[in-house]
Image (cartoon, rainbow, N blue to C red; front, side, top):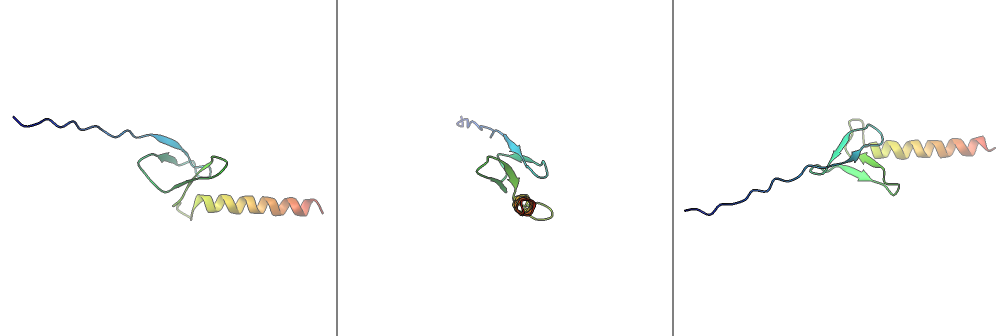
Length: 70
């Protein structure tokens, strides 16, 4: 008689959603970034990284704020 082997299925967890494109982030897929503010971003977006887009937006908002104060 052969030994029985238990196959434990791996759980698939949703870790969050991208802050830019709202794509679902799954535990078995890589390619996502979490920043210090605990926001999730796609690493390989269609038009570049969603994290890069977020950084550019934050930079533009900071530049606009400095011009408003003048």
